[in-house]
Image 1: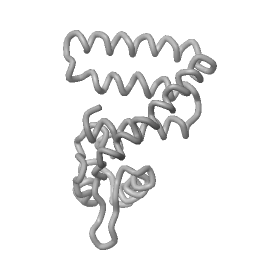
Image 2: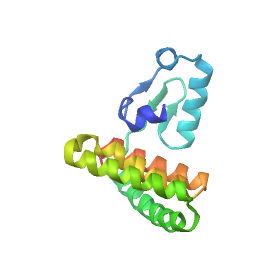
Image 3: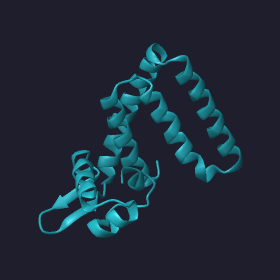
Image 4: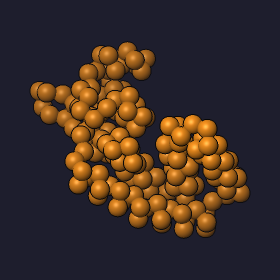
Length: 148
């Protein structure tokens, strides 16, 4: 579901209805309920008693804040990448950079996904799961809200 939010398949303001989501994902309602709880904890979903859950709609100020936070976290992740990334991590970064460059030249509309993959790889390669989670969530906020 997080990926569905990140790609805009579940747009800001979308009501999250259990049965259709469970059917679409090929799971029972319980995993969907748990996913909604986690997404709420991550700040990507709002829930209201008796009304259900919706994908969060971000204000301009919230998106700006997420951008500033992400910039700080990604700068630190880049520093940690240099210290902690394996040879394989570094090679994959080269490959992701080449993929981004190729898309920029041939299909700029798909660059957003390649850009996200590249940035998240850097953060993932720090081997700090919470840092990864924070950056991923802030990228989802800015990407889904304003296409940044």
